[in-house]
Image 1 (tube, rainbow, N blue to C red):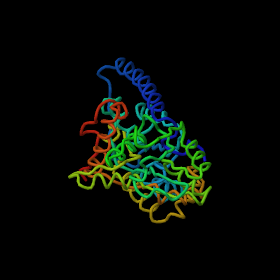
Image 2 (image 1 turned 180 degrees about the vertical axis):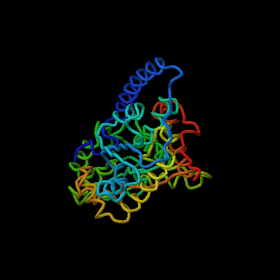
Image 3 (image 1 turned 120 degrees about the horizontal axis):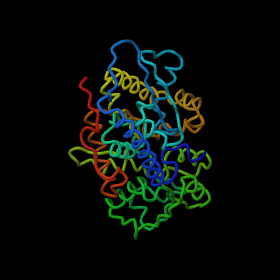
Image 4 (image 1 turned 90 degrees about the vertical axis):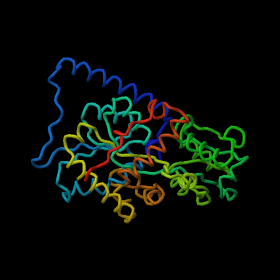
Length: 353
C-alpha cells in the first residue's frame, strides 16, 4: 500500500501550499482574461433541455468510495439523465485549478481544502454534502490501550504534524486532560507508511493511522488491533453541544456558477450520490469489488477498510452545523488550515427542494 491511496497523502501543510500557489496562478490568468472582456462576461446559461455534461473529480482514496456505485451505473448505462464524466486523480493540487478553470464542476475533496478553495476564489465553490467522516484510529500492537486516558505516558507514532491529524488528535487529548506536549510522546513521521512500518516492527507499538492504512496493518499482522476510534471520541466530546460538529475527512463541492446555472443537475447528482453511498454501506463485498475495479484500493483492502471509512451522505443544515463546527476547531488550531478565515453562510449549499 502506498501513501497516495489516502487523502492525506503527504504532509498536508505542503499540499496546501502547493494548492494555493497553483490556485493563485490560475486566478491571475482568469483575471487578465476577464479584464480583456469587460462587460462581456457571461455566466453559464441554465439549460432546461436534455442532458448536460457534468464533470466530476474525486481523489484516489476513501473519499472516492461513496461514488463508485454511481460511477459503475453510469459506465454500464443504468444512469443516463445527464452526461456524467468521472475522473480519479491522486494529485490533490490538480483539483482546485480545475474548479477555477471550469474543467471540473463537482469534486470530492478534503474538508479543510474546501474552505481553502472557497477563501481563495472569493466564494467560488459551495459544499454540497459531507461524504466521509473521520477515519483516524489509534491502533496497537498489543493490548494496553482501551481509552484515551490509557495513552498517557505512551509513545504514539503519527503522521500529519502541522495539519488536520495533529489538530484532531490534540483536540481529543486536551479535552481528556492530556497535554500533547508533556503527557504523551508523539513521534511524528513524514508519511503514514512510516508509521505503519514503525508499528509493525515494535511489539508494543501504538500508532495513529487513517484508513486504509489500518486495514493494511491488520492484514499484515493479526496481532494489530483498533484500540480507539477517534471519530467516536470526537462525537462523545460533542454530545452535549446544541449543534454538535463531527470529525470530517471529505466533502463534495461544486462551482457556484455551475450550481446557479444547473440546479436540477446538481440535485440529480446528489440523489444518485446518496443512493450510491447507501449501496456501498449496505453491500460491502460488491462495493469492494467495484472499488478494486477502479483501482482506488485493492479489493481485499477495500473489503476490510469500507466498514471503517465512515462513508456518509449528509447534506442541508445538518451538514452545515457539523462542518462549521469542525472547521472552527481547525481554525482555532491554525487559521491557515482553512484558508485564513472561516467561510460565510454561502459556503454551505442548502437546497430549496
